[in-house]
Length: 555
Image (cartoon, rainbow, N blue to C red; front, top):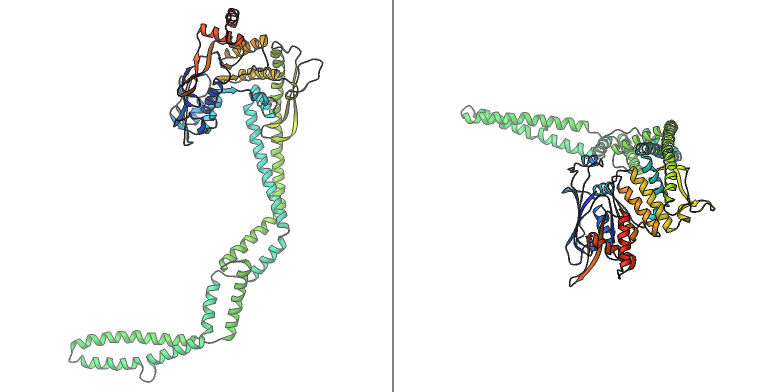
């Protein structure tokens, strides 16, 4: 339950520190006093959308902090899953907002994401505002109501898991069919391309070798002539370099007889001659191997032309890329050959997944059908004392024909306030006051099925008054006896008088501006507040006595 609420610098609230009681509390105040501002702050605390304009004028930041007692509500798993400290007696939620638009959220002083704050907030407080009455006529709300009463979380989870598997197989099958259709028109062309690449018998690295050979054959005569000249200069018949160096060697050897240093020089020169003779022999062999072969040059260039044309045609830069491209085509063609088998396999899988999905959808529908019968009976019984004695109410469940996120069921709440008129869709025939009463009944049933700590009703009494309002207050009070903290924001004295605690929201004006505040009323202040709700600004003795009577009856 919500124990304390602290608000600072939020809209018209400079500072608000309020303690809330368990059981049934009421909140009153004139229109525009600031009740909606307090609800807005609570929504922000529970993960609602933040806006820097919510910060009080001239302030840098606003803070909303709520203290909750969680014992007995089974919320420990949330804290374990999110690695958060759990304090059953005093769990603190805090939201901070700065003028720069930055928003921060904390749970027990640990920074958390907005998603985590929203998740915990939804487990702590249910705020029912007037616009939610419109949701009563929507598919999503009606299904959620049945699911809450049915307690069918495991069945819904199983259905969603089976649905996701069925959708995944369906997507795979559709993708395969699309690829099959796309490839059907390309197969002949792909085979033609692969045939051209395979017939070329390409070898990785072949292009570089052929380009080198082509370069050699193109300049064979020039190369041979230069090599021949180099050989002749080194070891030719007339005055070659080697013959002259041999003579030098002979001279050094002769000098070595009388000059020891000449022996070392002769040995060094002899080594050089050996290397030079080897170089000369290699040059001679190389020039002998170089021959101009026009036929071979033509063959090499034709091969290179084929390679270049394939690269240009397929927009590739090398034989390696052409080979990779060919392998891709081959793989695609092999895949195309297996399309029929793969599609048949997927269709069998889809049929089995569909059978599982239909079974889980049927199990989910069964839980809703049982809950619908319970809701029909309970709502009729609760609406009779709320001023609709001849109420007709039923829930029509049918197969929607589609496997949607929340099941294959279509649901419609049917209503008539008179026995003589046939039932129609609730949203189209019920008045505002009737919808408010039906919504209260639904909320009461859902509260009984869920361990929700706090429920806040924002003017759920729209369109009702008198004894009906008193009975609605009695219903809310009974809800608080089932382990829920119930807070009702109301303009009706009959409801205000039923509260075990009574808070008044009011505005004050001073030099700095207008401010909203809240106060817990004692008995005398409460009598005056309820009397004022009945008679206006002038508090008559009759109004004060009526207020006392209402409060006594409310007990």
